[in-house]
Image (cartoon, rainbow, N blue to C red; front, side, top):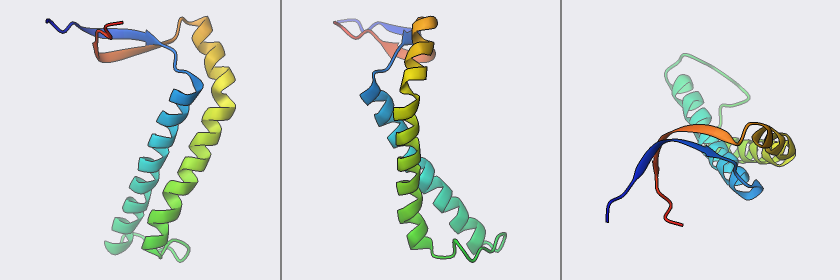
Length: 101
């Protein structure tokens, strides 16, 4: 069976999918920010009294990012849905496979 791929797609996510992507980005964005602060502090390029507890940064930054990104996706979904209705969805570029349904 031949797998057909496409390079352009128009989609509109439902609320749950948008929330999942936002939370996923929030977790890894928070971890990346905590890691960056850790490296800058250990390298002597930055000194912060407020963020000097590295373990606490790795716990709280992802939690705060999830809360912020999740709430923004929930509150912003009506605007996102309106935009997608006006523009036939979001235009995405990449490698997309034939869904088969």
